[in-house]
Amino acid sequence: MLTDLVVQDLGVIEAADLELDRGCSALTGETGTGKTLVVAALGLLLGSRGERTLVRSDASEARVEGRFSVPPSHPAIGILVGHGLVEPPSEGDEAVEVVVTRTVPQASRVKESLRAGRCRVNGRIVTVGVLAELGAALVEIAGQHEHQRLGRPAQQRRLLDAFSGAEALSLAAEVAASVRRAAEAARTYAGLREGEQRRARELDVLRFEITELEAAAIEPGESAGLIAEAGRLANAEAIAVGLSDAIEAIRGEGGAEEAVAAARRSVEGLIAHSPVLGTLAGRLESAAYELADVAAELTLQVGAPDPALLESLRQRLAVIQRLERKYGADEAEVLNYLRRALERRAELEGAEGDIERWGTERDEARAEAERLGTALSELRRAAAPALEQAVTERLAGLAMGGSRFEVHLKPAELFEGGAETVEFFIGTGPGDTPKPVTRIASGGELSRVALALHLLTTTGFVTTMVFDEVDAGLGGEAAQHVGRSLAGLARDSGVQVIVVTHLPQVAAQADAHYRVTKAERGGRVVTSIAKVQGEERVAELSRMLAGLPKSAVARRHARELLELASS
Image 1 (cartoon, rainbow, N blue to C red):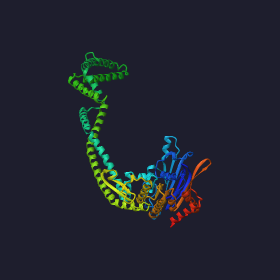
Image 2: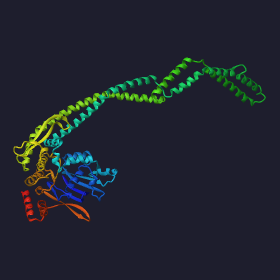
Image 3: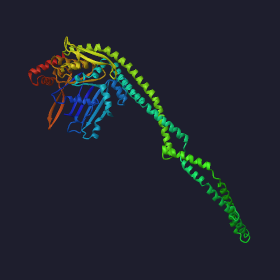
């Protein structure tokens, strides 16, 4: 349950600290004092949108903090543990304290407004989504326009499922998820089938190109080598003549070999006269050997022209150049194209398997959705008569005796909401033919129907229920019954009930009464919240009854309401 709510700089509320207890608590006050802002503050803690317009005009930011006492076995504990926000409770723990904080900045620029989602749970920063998940498990808020929501088909389905129990609520969520999954699979499958012919054509082209490129077996840098070799072969005859002339100059008559040999012999003949000439003779001998070696190498390089080999090289070069014109500027780009083509072929061939896989996924999701939808339909059909009777009886206690509530289930093609439509009908008097609740002319009657449904469909999971002026349009005996029902809900179910009301009959039934007042202080309007007891409570009820807190008649009536509530 909510034990403490601290609000700072939110709308007309400069600072307020609301300490709450179990049972039913009523918030009252003049119109415009800021009662609904208390509900808005609680909504921020539950993940609602943090509009900067909520921030007090002279403040840099609004701040809201709520303290909750949560039983260890409550589903919210699983959410908290799952997000690492609390340690798993130990056996014997009575309650886990959870502190939720939310700030909303007075942002003047879009970038600054992104800070509006600054949220903390037990001091740790979390997303607004985590707040919403946690808030849905802790608190349920029924707003003053709840009777308008009642006309929505989705709300009527939700209320029937909530009355059916946790299994129906779980099944409803699973049905919606399965239907969405089936629809997504069907869209993907249809898209794949639609592109099947296009993929087949693309695959044919890719397979031809890959075959052509793999057959060519191009190597990086190959064309440069081919060009050089072809150039050499094209000049083979001129090269052979030049090499032959060089060999003749070395080995021929009067050539370099003979000249070096003659020089060596002359020098060797002089060594006896000058020993130092031995070294030069050795060098001439080495020169003779080098000339012989060069001549041998040149002889090996002399070969006959090979026109067939030259033609083969030119054809290979033509193949490479043709592929470069089609697939890239050089061998590297051609090979890169081949790599991409292989990857794309694998992707397209894999898509053929994807078609079958998505078709299977679609069929399985549809079958699962139909199975779940059938189970949900059975629960709804079983719960509908019980809800009809319970609402009819509850309406009698809300001064609508003789009313008859009906739940109409009509089979429909499976959709996210199930395998049938759910529509609530109401006859508001004896002999009145039931008609859709959206056609009820009286706002007061519709409010009571909405309230009766809320009282009956509390899931038992939330620890706190907030009713924000759900009694709008009511008065007299009906208001008295509403007050008793809300107090009874808190007493019988153990759920903490907080009700914002203008009706003294409702406020008098509450276990605790808080008055919201507004005053001007230092040129600013300031709202404060205080618990009223004894004569202060009598005075507040008198104000609500007659607008005159000091009226003796009104005060006597207020005391009667309090005595009636305690009897």
